[in-house]
Image (cartoon, chains in turn purple, green):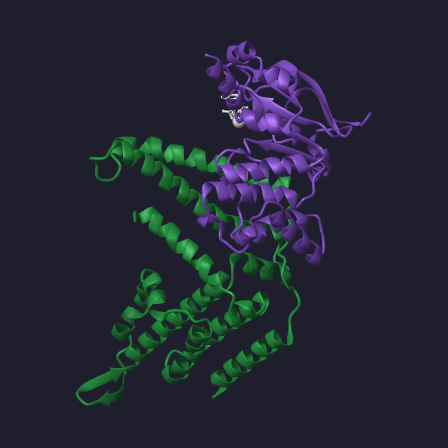
Length: 249
Length: 255
Ligand SMILES: Nc1ncnc2c1ncn2[C@@H]1O[C@H](COP(=O)(O)OP(=O)(O)OP(=O)(O)O)[C@@H](O)[C@H]1O
Ligand SMILES: [Mg+2]
């Protein structure tokens, strides 16, 4: 059995004391898991991902990443292992050129400039955006920024990938590439998305959130083909499955 | 283009200039910083009547415009707000200092006129030198140069982030006013009744954005020290550049 990478026990979280956003979240994720995090708008997907990298800290319960509790003083270690892609690329990218931004993390980890360059080239080549290397970030389109955001975490060579709506803003070809990259990545990944078809293509396990609670945690195909379950929690069948039901109409 | 877009365009335009792969841009940032600072120091140290000496200092900006392939008219346009201000400082000298110096035909040149011109030139040259530094060096490189001379990291990071946050703030303001004007098409500008709430929105949103950017930095290993890649060693070419200019400045000052 591969060892446990992420474990949450009875986690509660609220931004302000009035209403709690996450309620009694418990799950574990292992080394090679590919987990899709789904749920309606406001279900708490982004909040959960942020908890895992310590962007929200005052939670109740226990969160451990590779057996290290997520606390203020353990954050540097945890973040070095984890690549996190923001829902909004404008938050993720802040330097002037693509190359600088992709090189930011490796430089912070004290790698030599040669190694940094290798990492940057590799990350850009991996998702076929070498042509963007010297472009200035403010001149990129929304989808191009998304691809660059993904490159910025690939250059970290993380053990865990967390992505918040990665396929948003991508054209079909880039979406394909993203799916390909995700499938290549063998370590643990958790992907929050409304793109259920992508989840179906990349994840073997799905966690369904609704109003901050885990409603279901199980096999992707079982959950994503359960029309009643999905509709009860504000979602719909993946497009590829809707096709069948319409034909049979 | 709206005023906001224009301001953003200007900032980004400077980034584009600084990003060009060019001889002047490739000179080590620390060397350029030292040359610029010493140029300004020498320029302002000229005596208030030594107009001829000061005029010779114009050699440096002129040379840099050529080396850096920068457009002089563009620069004047960009500095159109600063330069008149700088010139304004000397404006009253002719009234205080009426000592005649020479007579050119019908026209009596007073000492005050000369000191006015030197004061203006000092201002113009200093502003130009600073502009030329920024136009040929990215903000990241300038900051790395500041770190090399041991300016505290906190201060340097402040400068860097302030520069970045200005664009974020302008972008945010642009988005808000765009969204406003799309839904209030018949108004010119923003109605004063919503100024308050728009400004509040802008503040909150840019605080959020700044927070998110900071989070993105810490998530990727930022611990208060900004590492700039690229060559940190000073090459022979850089040393030569430094020597040539400092000798020239010294010579211009002494003759
Ligand atoms: N910074 C914040 N302060 C207060 N409340 C917040 C904040 N961010 C999110 N919330 C609230 O927390 C709840 C969960 O938000 P979250 O962003 O995690 O949802 P989500 O599942 O990612 O939704 P979406 O699919 O729209 O991205 C929402 O009800 C939201 O109003
Ligand atoms: Mg979200």
